[in-house]
Length: 205
Length: 205
Length: 205
Image (cartoon, rainbow over all chains, first blue to last red; front, side, top):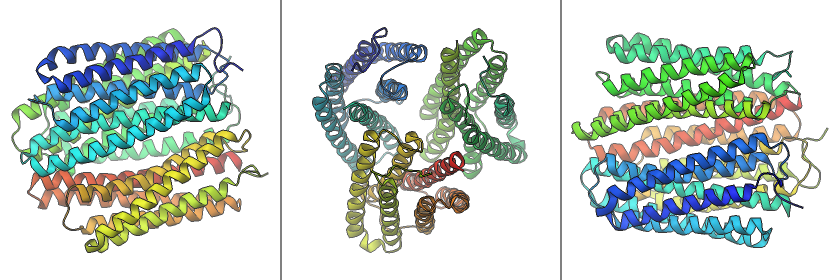
């Protein structure tokens, strides 16, 4: 049983969307670790976010025109939307750093970014295993994504704790709270991706 | 091929819901431009928000009782919910101005409100074209709504930039940040409406 | 006509999920009213939140493996997700109080928590009436949940009003604004539960 129709290779489309998220997360880590290069890296990230919009639009268009897909069309819509949310939120975090004229990164922002990159890499591998119909591995990777989301949750909590403990300027607190929230939201959308993938496997197992 | 069933005229219901959003956005612009009349205009806006709730409830009830609709029921649900979100968020922005005892509007709030009104007017026209099965025009208008959303996004970014650049009172920053965020969210829900409408057209083209 | 398939007793699963939300809301009220016991009660609430995750995962797994359900599978997904959101948001409110080192509760936090508990109890009764196919009572309870949501909305508005009126420390405003927002969001998710239940009844009446 083929999960996807022959004519439109949704696997290839989702591979490209997942790869694009990994690209974005790679730039995010680079930017957080080398904040002196933030200007150039933000421009590169913007290109990736725009590419994400095009990939998502392409998937949506093909989904709407494809009459029979062996897996729920709603699940494919949701997958494409959530992957796009991840890159949008990574972009939002970095763009706020520009708008807020942030002077330097923090160890928690670096840590959350690194965990986001690891998550993106696992998501990419999960799509590969889905293509190979290796459902046991898909499920294992989904558990791994959930584990990483819990870690980013704790990173976020630590970041908030230190922010309110050590920073006395309320305006700087407002700024960093929002940046951390965007990174945390990106991680929540990764967890959504894992939950949808787990659902697809359970329906097809 | 009729997009909607004969017995329930969903077009009429959605026309009224879209008109109601335009009414709300018109009051919003008036209020932002003439803030001395804010008290009266907020009351008018509240009536519009309540009317929106009734229209949405009416659509939902009829959708649940209608067994065959030629277009995905899920899409009609989502359309009604997102239109209701737009008016709820416009109301939330204005209500916060009251709760926060805001003394005057800002040029960015006026600009975002005007662009929201333009968006609402285009949404209304899009529903008309959908009724006429003029799908090419629906798609054109959806692109226009996306273009307007990008403009409001830039308005929002500028608003945040100036807020953190010029305002020194952190409490005033908290207040305006939230007001701008509600307007920006309203615009995001308009974009959702456009994306759902685009999907409906692609499925029926 | 049975609403749910024989083999998987979804009613029992949802009864347990709804009971778990009531348990969480009971601890929340206790914690807000007796803030000196906050440490112990937060630990109990964390257990409830973890239990909620397991119950939700269990429902999702069974839904994905059950091929024919007489009511829309999407509605059951949405119900399980929204119930889980309620307990997650209650937990988030309490966890932020810990992270922000909040010293005491407020009368508005107590009031919102009590109304959330009442809402949770009504949701539990609504699931019982759904199981008995007593659809008239389901609809009555849904109206009651909507009424309670409006009350929590007003509580929230009052809480924000007093916060910005009486508190001068911007950092304390940031903290409490977020705590109140989580409680308000929990109430919004309860309203979502009512709307989904109302939809199920209308489709099956």
